[in-house]
Image (cartoon, rainbow, N blue to C red):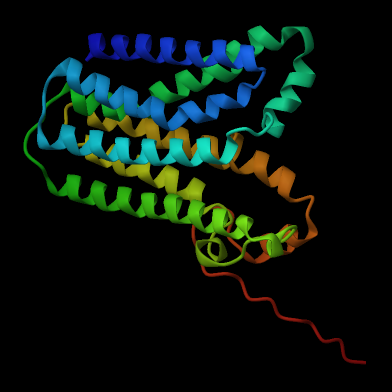
Length: 264
């Protein structure tokens, strides 16, 4: 396990080093987002073939991660290709000044690589230990993963269709999955990693994989996902009204608004 993890560290380091070098040439650090999903696919495939154990669980986890990673990469590349640097990275570019290059290397690219290793830890665990046959936990984990994938992929598709319609310019999507949670895609991503963690519970040290879903849920809910996007979106009065009756993260029925009638 230790040797396989070290090999994964080296692979991720080289992977994000390449992205960093390209980003400096084109002056766009937001391309790091394009490497997020594909990086997990790389970890899954590399550790699977390095270890050489092709059990049902190994293949299922690698397949699930590959489906998610390829879809997410395609979605982000299609959305961002040819566009200027994302507002978050553009803001840091101005703030960091002469320290832009070293801070981008460590705080953007290497930090994302570290998060990838932590979140992808259950993948390495599963591929390091062949384990026994499939169990009830594997079925539960698969069901949870499918639920998360549905929320992320369908949520992304609904938002893309909404933004593609010129009549929706300046409006806030409030239909489909977006009427139950303001961030179905973020909820879906976190849920998928809880599913992967449960799939890892049947292998030795599988319980240690809980660091993965705890990390991605914390990042999305409290640090880099929801908070940064909400700060930007809350400038829109329509979004603030939408936020009053729609759950921030976990899908819930929308709150009903009742008008208060003042009687004289």
